[in-house]
Amino acid sequence: MNFHRLVAPVFIAVAASIAAFVGVVIVAATLQDEAALEAEAKVIEQDMASIHKSLAVLAEDNAWWDESVDNITIEEDIDWIDTTIGESVNGIQDIHGVLVLRPDASLIYANFVQDLPAPHVLLDAGFQKLIRTFPKPKPREPISRSGFILAEGQLLAFGASLVQNSGINQLDDVVAENGHSAIIFVAQLTAEHLEEMGTANAIHTLSLTNDPGGSNASLPVLDFDGNPIRYLVWKTAAPGSEMVSKMIFPAIVLLIIVVLALGRFMRRANQLFRELEGANKAKSAFLASTSHEIRTPLNAILGFTELISLELYGKVEGEKNKEYLTLIRQSGEHLLSIINDILDISKLEAERFEIYAEKVDPILVVDASSKIIQAQADEKSIEITKECESAELFSDERIMRQVLINLLSNAVKFTRPNGQIMISGHTVEDRYQLVVRDTGIGMSKDEIQKAVSLFGQVQGEYARSHTGTGLGLPLVSRFMELLGGDFAISSVPGEGTTVTLGFPLYIKKS
Image (tube, rainbow, N blue to C red; front, side):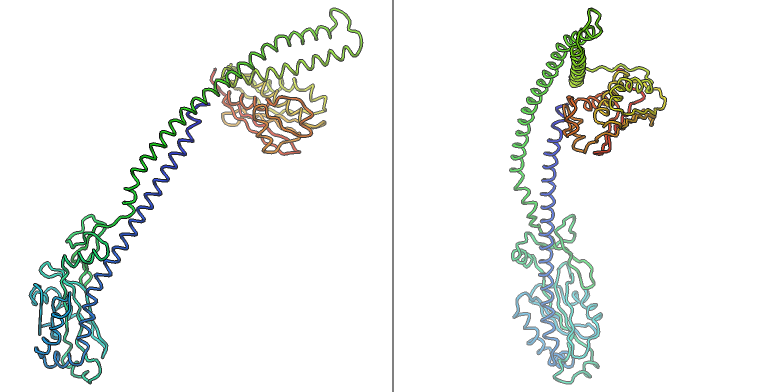
């Protein structure tokens, strides 16, 4: 196993966690900034609206009055206008001027307490148009309009109302004949006023500009036609960004700690991996060496047992002696097969198993393998059927035969008497697919996982009656991987097991 592939998921998980955390913080900070900006804009918009709406309320109080009809619309009494309406400008803070206009929008009276543009400039800037476009009022229902205008570079808030009778005196006919005069109160929006508004709402550097540029903290100031005439801009609080900026240093410190911890983990893990790898190689070497040492005298035991059984050098007396010789030979052969499996596993684990690719006829391999197992199958009256298509492939015949023998041996071992084993083979795209199906005891998914693991043995009443090391299926799996083939197993308890092998038609010589 490659060490970097082993630890890669840890680093991916850590990097993904850090990225996710940073992403959550950025999204949270952005949402907080947007909420703060939205709240600031709403506060400014409400304060700006309150300025001109308060002027409209004052204008309406003075215009919806029978005395105003008498002294403005009918008499045009300048002294009364000056002492009654003009004094409002002098007596009320944040009101910088008042204009009284005839129904044709010509000027009757003006009084300014601040350096405002001349009355005719204000009329040309929009007040004449405002009065002429006023909707026709309903009898004894006050009507007013408010907003902002721009005159000689000054931004002015205004509130205008048409002069009407309140209904105490019957002046409807007179008003209808003369038309409606208008009262307009004006207030200049100064830098000091904006600063006070910003300070009251904890908004910094609130000011007016002709163009907001790329600032996202801006709000258009509209005239009574809905056209932007100036822009309010300010420095947004941005609490989310401020929080992120305060977190940068602790985050860097934490990141350094994480990197150092990961570095230490890498060194310790690499050391442990090498120790485990060395232990695994030592285990494989020990198994290989021990297996060789055992196999050499075991071959001699098997050979001499065979010679004694043949009675070449003397007759073996007694049936029991002959039976014991047979048992010795069978036990020795079984032990030899176990040792051979252990040797194969050791070579595969050490990646020293060599492949010898040659032209192979799969039908011949299936026939040879089934003949070796046939005697065991006959003892249990198990029928082996074969249905294989002819094909030409280049593979290692020795490994193919060993894979099939292991599978057939397992199938015979775990199939009850009078059962069946079916072998089929055919070409599928670039593979020759061999399927071994039996009617044995079958396995569950958990049992399959255990069976394909090294030295894994499925426990059960039927399985316990058979000997084995649990290396059959693991060897098959590793041999197929070595050949570049496919290995799949499916099973149903009580019904049987199906193993599918996919041998590549061509493999590279090892």
